[in-house]
Length: 279
Image (tube, rainbow, N blue to C red):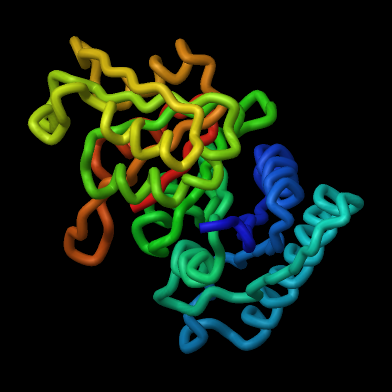
């Protein structure tokens, strides 16, 4: 898979500018079409709201989208990129911002979103947006930390490998980025319920597979010890000096929502570097 279309979620968060510059750099590197998408808040139920109130809401949404369009063009313009602007004035009653994002993400090779600011109580964006979007859209997601110190990414990548289906999907979807990286380390954590899935040398088989694709890769494994999986992965990424992590997104359906797995949720809540997710 090559990166030909990138979808950038455009919002009013303080973190957005860093995310936009990152998406623009990726689009320039891959000569990709960059789509900026702004999503309005959930629409009030028309049957119970006066027409004047609805018109006022639409007007406010339009003004917000215009501000975001200008912000998007200011941040990604001047880079000789092919860009496209999309915006929704409403999200129909019963729908969510996540529904709109997932629908548009299915027509992109990669969606770029941010880690939501949990202190923003007014936001209609779910706190677990990156993971939920990955599960719902069926497309890979690149999530940037809210407090990320901006730097180029994709030079030194840590791959979290547990020999499962989700890990295999993530490695496959991230292959263009892995091939372009200077260095890649595939890390298998031992002392977990996934131990039996590994070969004689954990992570060696997938490293061999990636090397055949021209990836400059090394295999590594370490015992989980007293840490939880998310803490161990983030610690290993820091020790390696990684500028991006690739991992599978785990989740399951429960009633009418998707529930993220513990390791996925833990990494996304505490991430200190951009995380490439695939399900």
